[in-house]
Image (tube, rainbow, N blue to C red; front, side, top):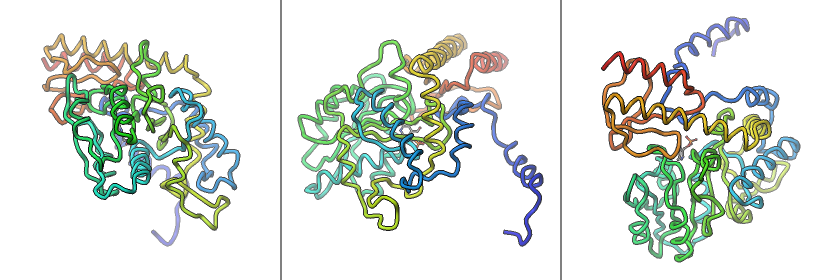
Length: 365
Ligand SMILES: Cc1ncc(COP(=O)(O)O)c(C=O)c1O
């Protein structure tokens, strides 16, 4: 830090130089985040000084968090779900598994069984919590093989996990079957819908993946992905709100005396922004957004197949994957662990962006 500060314009100009180095969204085809909705940005600023970590100081903002949790609980077919706004899917997954561990203290060598598609946040979770991570292999179409998953469960298993909207292929595991395995073995069942939670309910014929499925104990879903909120906004929901109590610690010097969240200080700005988007768009608005993303996904698949790139799976969501091949310079596309080209058709990947990409593809054929 320098001794003397500088003028406001200088600071802004200095930072603008760095911001200019960032890639433009109109060339980012690999991200599960997007340009936040205009209302989320305005509201974010309005709530920028709020701290959900000390609810007695910000009772209004705390009510907005409750409204967000209630709306998302309703969307997940359980208006009575408990929950709180996390920093994203990683924290939600970690906290869900922490709860599962607390609920089974008798397990001396605890393990969790996750699909091969599991996001790397489960590696972090197992490392932090000292758990064995058992990886159930893929069955068809990059969805978990539930028979194998069931075989991997033993008396030390504290949770099984299903993914609704896999990071790499946008697939949905057979959550009905996974929930059944959980009930048969009397274990916790976490559904990672960090991406799919705000896509699947808005598809014309949504696969069952949420609290509608008996046996599902908790769900991660991220407004900062398809919910068009500002970053960082995730949400962890629990079928039985009282289970959050397993994580409580005493917080003697705050306005509340107990806390179950991972972070202490927590932003209210993104949470208010996320709720604003939900309130503004309603289910109808989200259905339109998802329909647009799906239409663009179909157009991309059609265009890529015309160039001879074979689809890896039929997209169910706005994720498209293909056999590997050349990509025009300047475009950000990622690869799956199995080596397929991977595109995420987020709302910022508009029809124009897709057409621009395909015309650059045509130029390199
Ligand atoms: C299915 C899934 N779970 C969890 C995460 C982690 O979310 P975050 O990066 O918000 O922590 C991601 C990120 O893409 C994801 O796709």
